Structure formats: C-alpha cells, structure tokens
Length: 102
Image 1 (tube, rainbow, N blue to C red):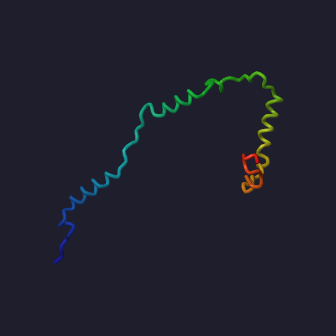
Image 2 (image 1 turned 90 degrees about the vertical axis):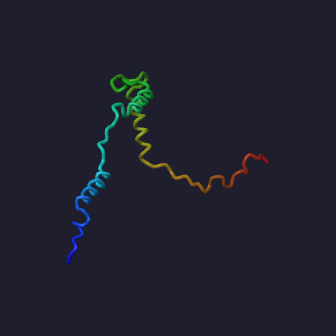
Image 3 (image 1 turned 30 degrees about the vertical axis):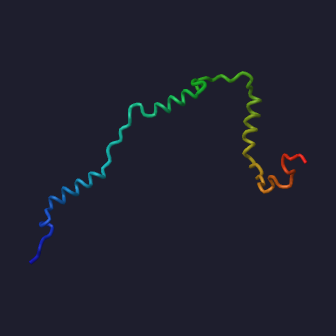
C-alpha cells in the first residue's frame, strides 16, 4: 500500500501558500514625488553668484590674453613634478625647547 502524501496534504493549500509567500518578495513600483530634488536645486541656485555666467561671452575687466596664458601655464606646470615628500621624523627634533626663552 502506497500513501500519496501530496494528495494527503492538500496541494491547493501549498499552491496558495507558495503564491502568497512569493508575493512578499515582489517590489512595488518606485514613484518619486513631483518635487523630488527641488531643495537641492534651490540650494545650488541660491549659492550661485551669477546664474547667467555661462550665457555671457565677455571677459572680465583687466584680464587680457597674456595674463590668462601665463596663469594657465603656471597652473599646468604644477602637475609636472609632484612636491617633495615631507619628512615627518624631523619635525620638532633638535630645535629649541619651545617657548621657554631660556
């Protein structure tokens, strides 16, 4: 005599149980608020000095091509060679004893 345990334990009950347990893992559609990010946009615009700066094509007074070229060249030359490393073991070694003055 063979006992069929699948029929014995109500297969429709298992189907309902599994379907309900799987729906707990389902994700809802993520809906953002219509004003999402407006606080950041307002903060950025409040911190911007001239909001129309990108639309202007005029140079600042006192800025000619020679000065700007030397400024850009000096800026780019700072990345040619890294600064020498600082030896932290020599800091505070061998000098005076501080602010004693004696």
